[in-house]
Length: 376
Ligand SMILES: *Cc1c(COP(=O)(O)O)cnc(C)c1O
Image (cartoon, rainbow, N blue to C red):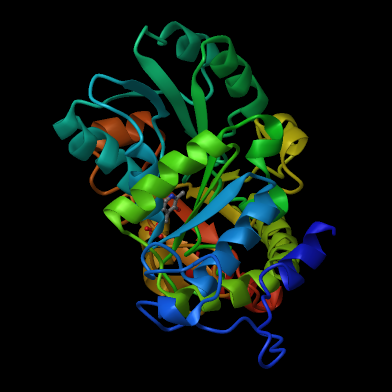
């Protein structure tokens, strides 16, 4: 099956009693073992639930991996993956990772002496030079947030393989419809399924896919042992959301391209960041590893007053953290997603007071442009 077909059909499991088309929601905590002839597949719903398994098989199938796992949030997926490391392990992680991942790496896993070193995602020589005897993995996010910087996944994989390291990719911004890191040689893929995969701003969920059996055993040990599993109702919502991923993203990308084009010509806009732009420095690499530029962009206004006025005046678009929903969401990284980073560090990363991030939704583009125009 091609990916569009997999998205629609891949999450359906039938039920021999009824022939149901939609996957049943198995709301149960446990299973009566005396009712089963032969091998017992499910014994307790933390360890396994059929609705969750349908979702886990679906994401595994989409990412072309060995096994998938569903967690109670994207950050539960991240923390579960990072829990495979031990004290004194060293991990290279790109400096503009998601804020919650940054917090885990800099303030939580340090309690257990797992050492994270933040590196520039585009400085491959430095990444190579930073590898030590106890380095175990390279963790990346591409495109990055909020400036849409691109990391060459194949190049990271090459460096990692030469040094016997794992490559972990947070693929939230692209989804498996647009980018499949395991096919490029990565070992573990993570999603905040809260974003594009679910797509309707109504579920918090995380997914992980690994490429082989040993990693699957390690992640399963943590999923079951630490217990941050996704409940069956949310699994079902996610299976349903995933069915329309392709049509949503195709349309959102079209809207994003039109908005980018319009913003680029606006007199109050200084710069637009979007991997689909001809002059985006990562464009070529991005299009060699992904099937489209996605539906998140950011832009800088010519002065700070315009940015703050825009955030106050925008009407149709929601002012919120999060992204990937059917509705357009604008955010102001300085006071929202990146507020925890000290100002001088933030500015070094390019996250300035005139920066606005946009996750483009499914609205009529004319309405969005009119709204943006009056807010600017
Ligand atoms: C939102 C997000 C996360 C965290 O996911 P939650 O579902 O909010 O826990 C992790 N990585 C990226 C890139 C994200 O955008």
